[in-house]
Image (tube, rainbow, N blue to C red; front, top):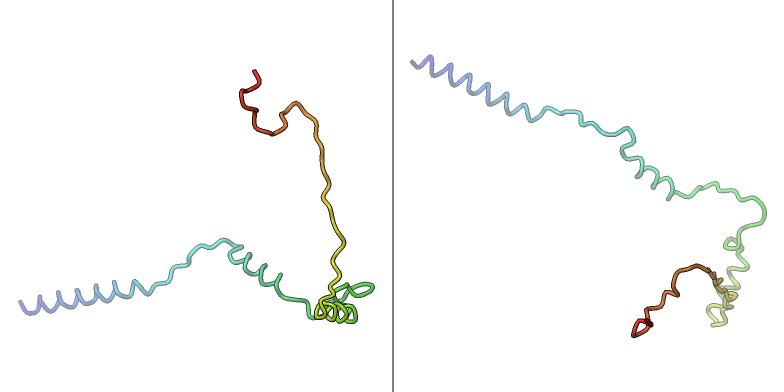
Length: 108
């Protein structure tokens, strides 16, 4: 009977070891071909071009003398206010109401 018990113990040990090793199996998870593309695109968008070249005169922010003059004005409290801007008014005609709430009494 001790021989049967030894065989049973051996089989049990093999099954337990096999079940334990089953957790080590790596399955390939299906990912979309474009997985991570948004992150890669965001990273590329945030990297400045170290060899940027601009056609024509430098942009306003790149003019050192104007930037220095603006900084001096700022420190002195003599900032030049930007030109006033206004919004345009768009009028529309239609059969709709004025958008105002109805008058008390309803007008009927």
